[in-house]
Length: 491
Ligand code: GLU
Image (cartoon, rainbow, N blue to C red):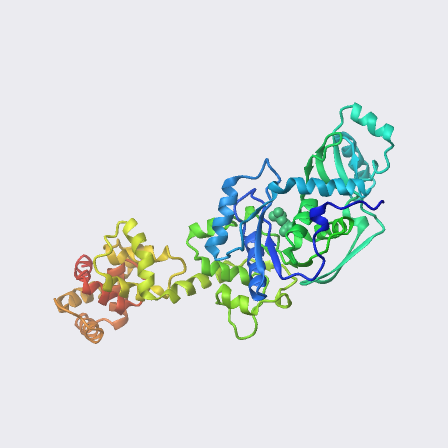
């Protein structure tokens, strides 16, 4: 292979040690996926921890599948999660001329060549390999075409792809920041790799993923490529491209995959996987970002599991990123979301719930102090903000009795006890101590245990045997004189 003058823009890339610059390179072919978002989290944490930059590159070279709505969804999702990026996003498709120049350089230096094999030829090649129980690979059949052979294929109207030579005898190795020493055999990379499609005659056509990623990462002076471990084989291929193009190599960190309950890679089939879906379900950005940090990273001893992105950034490093896949755990995400709602405190929780209560037609907003106390009562038991809508409902309107509540009211003495309570109920204020006394007095009058009246009172007030602290519930309802009608309807 000959020495060829490099593309000036690539030749100018310095191989001196770089400041930390990482990137997220999402393809806008779908909504922001939790796997991509988790990769974004690790990139962001690493950049922030090291005072480096976190860049964004939209990999939109697959023109048929890329859509602006997905780019918007990805940018919105990252912003919502609090993963701010540095500078304007780089749009990959705008850089195609540089990609083509790099491919031309590889052609000129003999690292790449045009392959004219037809689909039918490739299919029969793969069938023969399958019959011989060999792994499918391109057999490098057009590596050494003569000019005459090439002219004949062109005359037949065949379209070419451009392939990059991969030496089967090579061993590619690198020091992965998560996985340690990595080795990959050239023979396991599937034969000479396609780096451009639809290359007619002397045109380059459409540059493909591995080539464009290398050119862009080099041109953007990325110091560390942090991405999912499903890209490990690509890394081996990309290292060969860096070498052939004479470009300085970044360091690599391959993060573990997110797994579903069965231990397989989390996919669309597992239901909710896009960040906008989690948002629509009512998860908070803070809880979700916190949860994604825990997917594959273990916080240092004593830090606990609830933390902000900034707190995680202050201690983040690859030494605590696990190699094993990270199983998605709804219970933990729910717990974290509950923690976030609880941390809000009653004032802020009321501010968030008020528009939802109003949208649900509760007639909320007239008594802020009462609503604040309602939030104080409900706050600890909420998982999602939406739970604060359903759980507040019986505080705004008299609920129907569910079967368990109806059953409770048939217990011996239950209705009598509620009647006694109704008669003792003061018109004015009621304190917790007075309420306790009323319960004892009513139980005594009806000849039932206190447990019976308490359970019956819960059934009468909330229409259910489940709910928040009974005494606080009653006092809240009494403040708005909503306890009396609920008792009256029960006997
Ligand atoms: N566009 C690629 C993807 O979304 C980027 C992979 C990479 O980080 O190089 O999987």
